[in-house]
Length: 468
Image 1 (cartoon, rainbow, N blue to C red):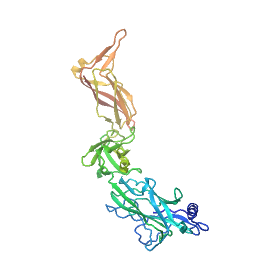
Image 2 (cartoon, helix red, strand yellow):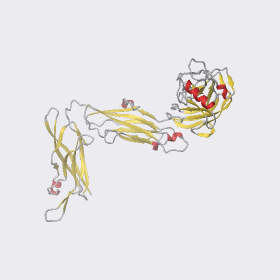
Image 3 (cartoon, helix red, strand yellow):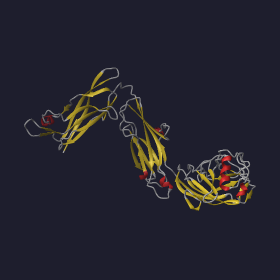
Image 4 (cartoon, rainbow, N blue to C red):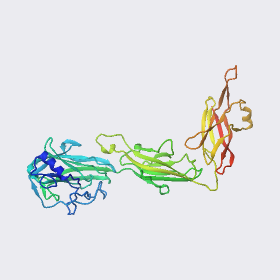
């Protein structure tokens, strides 16, 4: 694991803070300097140079993998001598600077290990650095940290060394225990070392299983650039598509209540999502399309996020981790060659309902596709039984009235309706006329222009049910 300071810069800093320089600096020659090398492995020989960015090969984890990065090796000479200078009393200033440094915590797969800042005190003869470049090598058997640590000398509260390690993404579930081995040396191969290195930093890191998704092969699609998963459904024009399902394996130890689904812009296209608890640590997300009246030959896309989050628990990194998976949902509408320019309505029949105790006006919305410039007639045609015809109030106000075009999620028309009408003739009080309880069928004529320019007429059915 290594990042490297320019030798001249390191030389100046070491000289100023540790007072261990003799005769000029730069280039690792006459002056002291500071550099850091990559993570090393198990000391096996290699040809890695001091300025490379390779990382150690992580030791196998409990599941045969490694939780973090892996790569090449940097050799550490098994034959070495030591100098009368040590780095002691190492603490992690990011966690608890009053205790000896150790690395521990519980995370979920895919989470990032917390960064660590190791601060050690220099003890001994600083003059051994005269004319030398100081190398810091961190051996990270489990691959818990990213390559290229940053190393710098410090002067307060005492002369010493600060090594900052950036936590890696933890890729493999399991329990990882062992020691970071920190070498501070006067050459690349660490054949001349400070007196008490390698310095061991114990770690015990638990990586829980993350969230898993399973999509039936019949509904697998191509994810967008920002997403990892994709669900795709298709249907013929005017027909609802099949319900697609995603099986979600909940993160280890998290309850079903931690799961939530975001299905995109509420003013745009999105599927209807229903989540069911399977009771075995998994959940089923069912995705359907209620707004399936869409123009044929087109593809409609929506972005979804499946998230698991729980209230924060002090001191437990895993509770702070929001686990989510991005899903692309697409709906394709196939053209039916046997139905040129059909008109498809949603719903196929508009069923209205209102109470006989109110004269409030309500609005029903009809969505359609496959038509150009569709308009409803200004009046509806009642399809009454003889009994209903006899009881129907003979007033000059419509109980159901087409109100014209309304742009919503799709092309649409709206109808206003009510079950009672208040009438106030000139010089008289208000009179209320109500429909008797029951269901009244009607239809409304519509006209639309076909793609070849022909103007056609059809009828759209509906009913008004009057309740107590």
